[in-house]
Image (cartoon, rainbow, N blue to C red; front, side, top):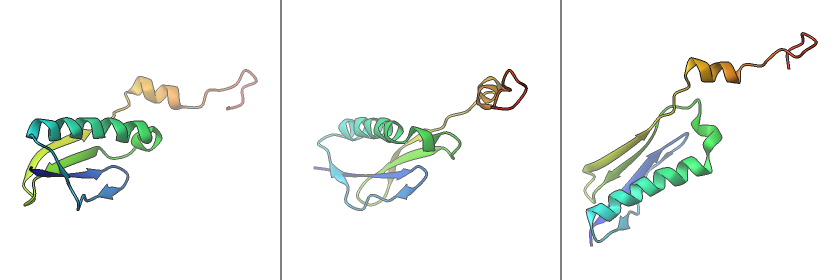
Length: 93
């Protein structure tokens, strides 16, 4: 059964030295997508404002098979929501 290695780069870098066996390449690729969801679910606050996150899947000899890149961008309208708003008394809150 082929072994696939899932290297992740979020706010930290993780090199998968063990790998995981999957009967088909499709199952390995689907697992990469599931892993991206887990990473986002477990660390939503560190995602925003960081560099793009990535998952790179390689085979046993290190050949890159797939790369998922996950990047969140804040638009000017979203940036305006993050700015402190003045309180009614004129002070910043």
